[in-house]
Length: 228
Image 1 (cartoon, helix red, strand yellow):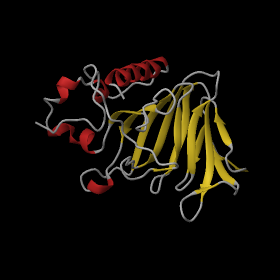
Image 2: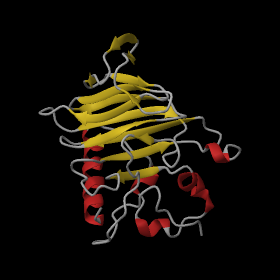
Image 3: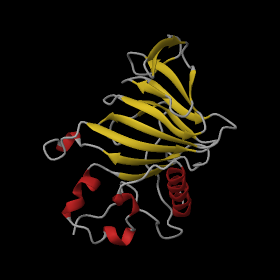
């Protein structure tokens, strides 16, 4: 991705959060120059990859395959003595036309919540013992206290305020229902590790290569400099 694309996406998500009165923690507003001066007091942000995350999955088509995220809180299972949180929370922002690719998580379970805007469509499949997609078996779905069974590949519509529980090994992808506008989502989960806990089908990358065509507006969660 070009840095200018990332900067534009950051500003769009900031505006969406402001529109729906979703206030962000201070570290989300730190300028890149400030990060160059910060000491070990902010190691939790660095080590738990808190903050901004803009991805095109390495495909170079952000407006078609990609979306914007903020990790607000997280633990770190590889440094559990230092960071004992067993939970994570994110915000996600999708525009119409964007797509978050099909994947499951080996470790974390999560709830995806529509916090405002349009409607999100989350397609669900079970997985087979070899971890490939099960395109045949019905899927048990948990949404806001309701349990039901749907055919494989069903798209679950979440309107503002609605949520879905995503268990381990459940394939899911996201799109925005056309004509409903951009969506601000919440995610509440167990500890999140985007380096090791995503199985994409078909395989894609997770963090983008960046072409520096302008200075960064904010640093992404995998760009923080070491503590001073």
